[in-house]
Image 1: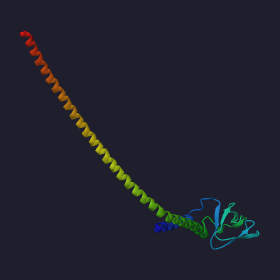
Image 2: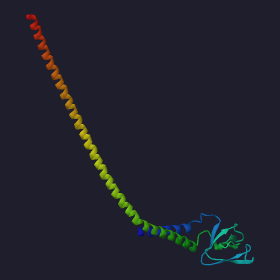
Image 3: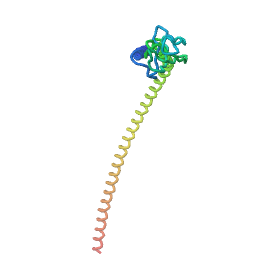
Image 4: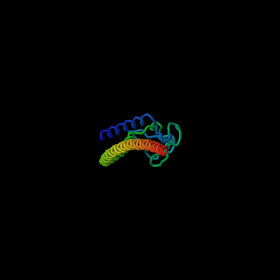
Length: 199
């Protein structure tokens, strides 16, 4: 899991660097940066003839306040100062310092996520073990219930068949008794008529 997190971090870093090199910032079209490896002076107007207000460090994120004028941009720097700098020292791509800071922030977040995952891993493993045991117990209960239902179904079928046999037996016995009584009554009545004739 640690290897996967490191791989993900490297992939995110590569993607971020590629994006920073190829595309301008998506936060604002007015966002730009002072090019790396140097600092530049900020003037009070769009020319070196205007007085110097101070310097802007290399890689500083700035806000463009105007279009290019005489090779200069009016900007607002990270210290909230406004002035003019030469356009050749302005770029839309984030400098190495910003890229490093962003990657450092991403790494901090990923390290925290990794630490949290390492803390949660034993708990998740324990939960997985508990859920597996519960699943096995439920599976056994289901099998037991299936067996009980099957037994009850078989017992019901057996009882139903027995009840049918008993009904057939009782019906046959009643029919036999009725037939026997009919024969006896027929014989008795015929004898009585015979005796009545002799009298």
